Image 1 (tube, rainbow, N blue to C red):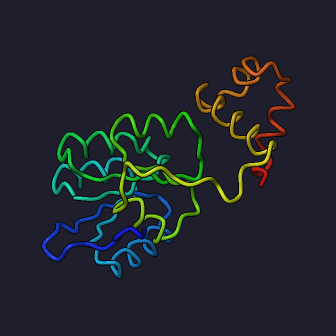
Image 2 (image 1 turned 180 degrees about the vertical axis):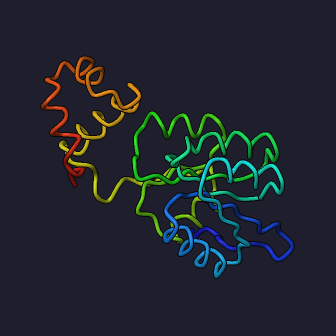
Length: 184
């Protein structure tokens, strides 16, 4: 059984893309336009909230971590202005806690970068009740550990000393882990 992932001709096709990575958001806007959407872009929380207030879109893709704040603020504005807006959170810092927070305030899906336009389209137009299949490439134990450390680090407002204390880890060891790239 295949999902129909196309827009109806009379359907509102407005799409707000909020991401501070300018080349990425431009590529995604162009790709989503080819798929029938009418994209508008914003590169900050302030700009995203202003556009959501002025012209609430039918769809939105919002980066979680933006230079001037948290993308969840944009989601709250979208929800208040247009409750039926289908919102997808897109982030390079995937963690269970933030995914849960995003869904609780109204996102229909949560995608980790790199996600392509097909992934975004499936998330925006797909059946929200459908359960995802098992992961093709499950995370390694090192990756799970790294994700946990990142989540605690974010919960501690990026305070290394407090994070090290909560993880019962030496501060310098934690600093070395945070300085490295994420494991595969």
